[in-house]
Image (cartoon, rainbow, N blue to C red):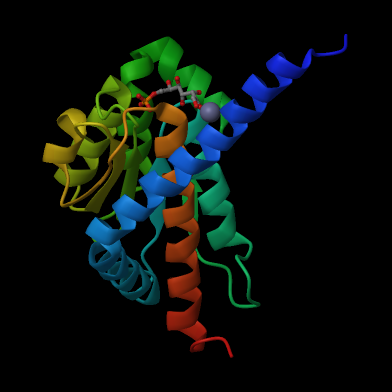
Amino acid sequence: MVARPLESRAMKDVVLNAFAESTAVKQQFVREQADRIVRVAELTAAALAKGHKVLLFGNGGSATDAAHIAAEFVGRYRRDRAPLPAIALATDIAAITCIANDYGYDELFARQVRAHGRAGDIAIAISTSGNSPNVLKGAEAAKACGLITVAWTGGSGGKLAGLVEFPFIVPSTVTARIQECHITMGHVICELIEDHLLGKAS
Ligand SMILES: O=C(CO)[C@@H](O)[C@H](O)[C@H](O)[C@H](O)COP(=O)(O)O
Ligand SMILES: [Zn+2]
C-alpha cells in the first residue's frame, strides 16, 4: 500500500512529536533530578563495594528495563570490569509462574525480595503509574527487609513515590515517555558506577 502525501506527513509528525516530547521530558527530569541521580549512583557503588546486590522489578516494559539494567551490571555497560551482582525479578519463568499460581500475582516481587534481599542491598521498583500492586508490595517488602529503596515512576508518582527513600518521578503521564527517561537514567547510573569503580574514562 502506498501512503498518500498527507498521510505520510501526518505520520512524520507523529515521529517528530514523539522525539520532541521524549527530549523535553528528559530535559525537565534531569534539571530536577540530576543531583539525586548522582546520590543514588554513589550509594549503589558503595553498597556494591561492600558486597551488596541490586534487585530490580517492574511489569511489562518496566520488566524488560529491569532485565536490561541488571544485565549491564552482571555483564558490562561500557568498560571491562568485575561482574556486579544484580537480579531482575521478572525473568525466572519458573519462579514467576509458581508464585503467581500459588500466592497470587501481587506477591510476585515481594516474595522474591524476601528470598534474595538482604539489609543494605538496593531495591529499584519500577512502575510508570506508581500504583501496580505487585510493585508496591515488592517495595514494602524491600523496606521491611532493610534494603535501600529507590523508585522509578512517573505522573503523580502514585503510592510508590511515598513508599521509598529515593523516588524518581518523570514529569509525564505517557507510559512510553516515562520508560524512555527511566532507561536513560539507568544507563547513566551504570556509567557513574563504572567510573566510580575504575576511575573516570579518558
Ligand atoms: O511497555 C509498556 C507500555 O510502553 C507496557 O508493557 C507497560 O509496561 C505495562 O502496561 C505495565 O503493566 C504498566 O505498569 P506500570 O508501569 O503502571 O506499573
Ligand atoms: Zn513499551
